[in-house]
Each structure stands twice: as structure tokens, then as C-alpha cells.
Image 1 (tube, rainbow, N blue to C red):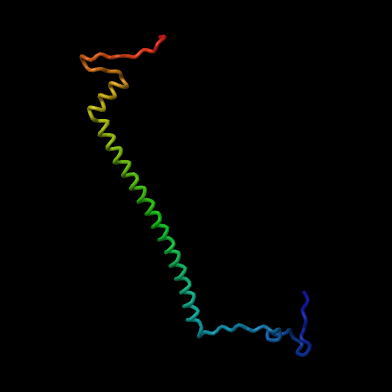
Image 2 (image 1 turned 90 degrees about the vertical axis):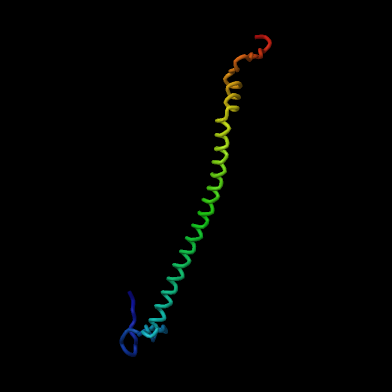
Length: 115
């Protein structure tokens, strides 16, 4: 490592000789600096909480839409259950799917030609 010694004083050059300004800490500025840091922290905290609240509201809207859809489906299923439990539906299923007839009725079975 190469360093040089100042020719006039025989020592290393000071910071003022190199053209840099020395930053001094002023105790009078400490409360102001603390207030700025606190304000930045509060702003960041506020915006993060605001973002979380917005996300929660969107989730709530989606859940309310799902609830409405499920309530409609539930109402349709209740209506279908009433229909299935009715005597007319039971009779229709017995005639069409099971091939049953009432007493005194004749059952007609269509036959395809050639069989």
C-alpha cells in the first residue's frame, strides 16, 4: 500500500486538505432527526396496514359472492328435494324407469320389428 507524507508538515494529509467536508453531528438536530425517522416509520406502518385492509375487503367481497351463489344453489336443491318427495314424481319414476303399472292397467311394451 502506498501512502504519501505531506511535504510541509511531515505528516499525513488531513481531511480538510483533501477537499472533503467533515460531517459534524449536531445535538440540536437530534429531535428533528428522530421526528423524521418516526414519521417515516408511521407512514410505512400506515400504508402496510391500509394495504392489508384493502386485501381483506376484497376477500370479504369474494366470500359474499360465494355465499350468495351457495344460497341460490341451496334453494334450488330444496326445491328439487320437494319435487322428488312428491307422490307424482314417485309415480312417474315407477312408471318410466321401473316399468310398474297400477292395478287394472295394462302395460304395453313396444317391440322392434325383426325380434
